[in-house]
Length: 204
Image 1: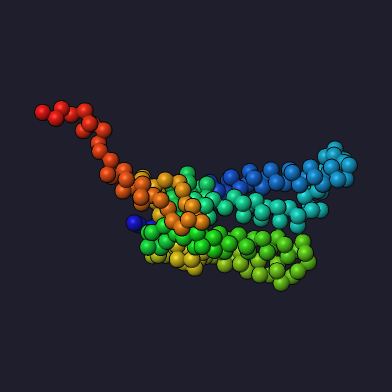
Image 2 (image 1 turned 120 degrees about the horizontal axis):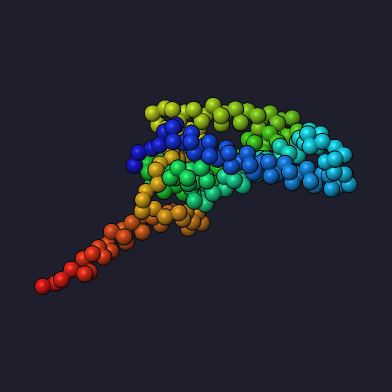
């Protein structure tokens, strides 16, 4: 199987970015409503921007949580919503199904820097903010490693994974607790099935 490079993964990223922007807006609205309700005020009394600036650290944490939840499908079905739309799947770098542990570590590498960067200011822990900020920079720069011959971003190489085109015979199930995809079994079963047209051919 051939690994997918920067171009198609970029469009998957764009789709994920648009969906995340919408979800972040929903999270911001929910936070604003919660704050105003606690204050007994309304947007006619204070501006939306005032609320968001005053609670920017809470908003950052909410956005990090949304990001973590949004990417959870990468653990369960080896693909984010953007990858699903583009027909991509995360697999072991040799093309075999990735293990649940690989997908979990890959997800953690992508999510934890943002969570740390958001938690640091909220808890007033500067080292946590620093670690999160450095992690985010490494992730961003590491994304461009996809342009290399291996077509692997930093989080891909660290977990020995890569992104491939979804097989036409692969179903969208990756039961991590049970190990691997069942797509190979499905493929073998489908190949063994007779052609429906042959069932109606005369046998004499």
